[in-house]
Image (cartoon, rainbow, N blue to C red):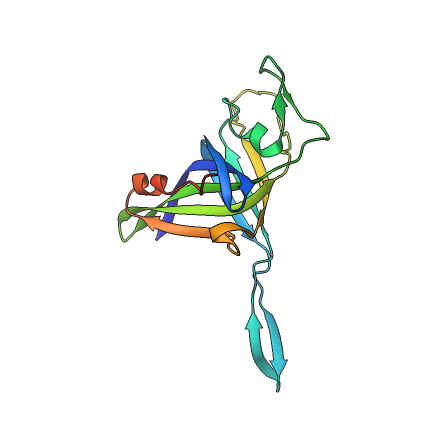
Length: 184
């Protein structure tokens, strides 16, 4: 099976007790999940491995979005706010970056057939994104928005102890129907 695409990025603000607020979406260019703690800890006894255990210790989500023209994502994941006319995004030291749940869908080819994989991360906290822009030269170079988030294990609700779920579907519509988190 091979991954051939990614789409349908959603973020939902975590409100506590395993529940989430409204869902916001943006067009996904790429998503990358890197996990810490993949190497097992080994206990040696009588000159051989007697016990071995690996544990999730956290991770990093990096997403690239094509644009956030409607202001759906940036202000919600950073606690930034727009001024009264809605044209200036302000960041200040008082912002309390919220925990979120995120989901996205991976398009796959399995034995010659298209399948869809839904990935959900139950608890992430985004960082303020860097700005990396340059002037236009003789050719156009597309620039996108990149966001990075720390991944945590859920501590409350029906998914307590989990940090991720991955579910496969036969159709994109089925995957989209399951991409939300429990609502408050």
